[in-house]
Length: 230
Image (tube, rainbow, N blue to C red):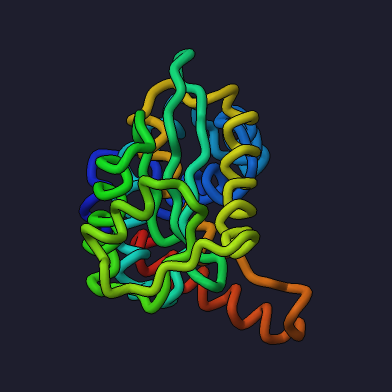
């Protein structure tokens, strides 16, 4: 992304990207972000921030994913239902052995066809097959595994996919904050960006020295500024 992308906008890239980062990085509403920017003397409406997130968020995520490269070779998969306009949808999510989000897909079904579609999206995203797939015993996973990745080791042991189940927690928090998603498209757009940004700024702080944590955080901000031309 270059600074010309922001041509015609009243605010500079630094302000726009900061608003998008606040909204996706923390459990904040659009009005919360509006107030935080106002505290810094930046007067902008929450609807403008919504427009920034919808316009620039997917592009930021795309740039960050390219910088991120391939993730781990053990893919933990799980699906969880979400209510959207009173209808049940399923959020399919894959994370690697480090808990980084690989891919997210919102679908109406959790049958074999939906599972195969998710598997193909994973392969397209990563450009390679994993060493191992970790899922529960849902038959759709078995069918998709046999049809899409038959050579990959498939682990369905009890508790093996706990990592994938835990990865749904930030989504549940945001779902409550947003008072549920308004459409499948909105959920897909938001969560795709949200997952990538969490990957860059989520560190196991309790497991590392403070100087290492600060170094990783500084590197994450550097990548963010490069991806957003801020």
